[in-house]
Amino acid sequence: MSKDAGLITAEELRRRAEGRLREKAAQLEVPRSPEEMLRLIHEFEVHRIELELQNAELMRARDEADRISEKYTDLYDFAPVGYFTLDRSGAIKAANLMGASLLGVERGRLARRRMGAFVPTSARPFFSDFLARAFELQAKLSCEMPFSPEGGETLFLQIEVVPDAAGQECRVAVIDITERRRAERELAEKRRDLEEMNRFLELRIAKAVEQLRQKDEMLILQDRLAVMGEMINNIAHQWNQPLNSLGLMIQQLPMFYAVGKLSGDVLKETSEKAMALVQHMSQTVEAFRNLFKVDKETTTFRVNKVIARTLSLVQKTLQDQGIAVYFQQETDPTATGFPNEYSQVLLNILLNARDALVERQVDSPRISIQAAMLGGRSVVTISDNAGGIPDEILDRIFDAYFTTKGPDKGTGIGLFMSRTIIEKSMKGRLTARNVPGGAEFRIEV
Image (tube, rainbow, N blue to C red; front, side, top):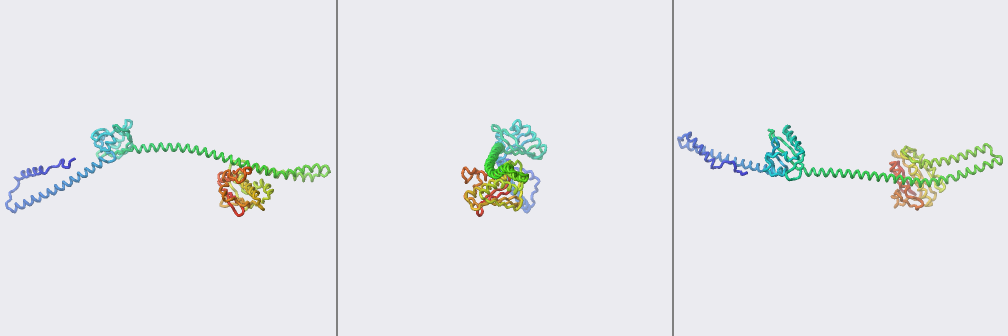
């Protein structure tokens, strides 16, 4: 728009002024003196200057108004947001360039077209209700809905409506959120894919955990069978002397009877000795049976009692190797877990200590056991004087299938399963270290 459009030219103003002057000429009184003439000329000059100043101020105000109008027009037309003015029926009265671009129509062709015509048919009732509600409430409302521009793909637009005070028209701001909705849709798809992947991984992990659990159970069983074989040999060895003694007693009875010396006292004494031997053998079998009975539930047990029961199974073989065992009971600690599996751990450590002492032919071999209660936990230490564990393998002795023995003397899973039992099954801790003269294993439960 031209800045001079609609303004009165200087020539027109002069013509109008001369006309008014002629109209008032009849009313003017003829000056009666030169002084009065000078006064009138002065007033006319002042009035002229005032008019010039007023005209200059009006021109400045007009220029400022034009500048503001141009600035507003630029802001309106080139805004990154679509702006519309709608009447109560939803007809477009004005739109900026972005608004026209969003609808896919030249701005000059938008006048009086209903904005709802650019909404997909299925969404038009919602748009009409939304617009009517904004006029009814005389409040700013917003929504998100699809639009179908002419010759283009469907867009998702965020619409904000603000009715005017008279309630005859409203201002509408429109933002294209198509990319955001697409990103949200892709994000939702990625999230679903991720959730599906997580479920798949959870199944894989659960399967792997189950396989590991079964593997651990097989390793525990393998270790238990290995210990069982060792214990059977020990029991057979322990039973040799009692069985020999029973055989001698039975052989003596007919001999006493033949020479007439089988009195009631002799029979009673022989019977009591035989029963004591049988009771000892029965206790050994009971200890062996308890050791290999699978614990189904955790229980609180007396640690010293389990240590004593375990020692009864290996004491004979240790004595035959000349190994002294010292069991120091400072207190009577208790632990919660699986007592038979705990006994299996003790057996593994004791048998490893025995093998080390025998292999290295230690003078005065010994095994020391201490049990105490520290910080609310039972602590058992088992140490020997076999010279200790080489530093280069100390960190590996609890690894599965690691062994320093020959293939015919060990499977390498004893200490691995011992740590698994203590740390996984009983939530405790099993460690090893070298101490002066030998190695020490520490069980905390």
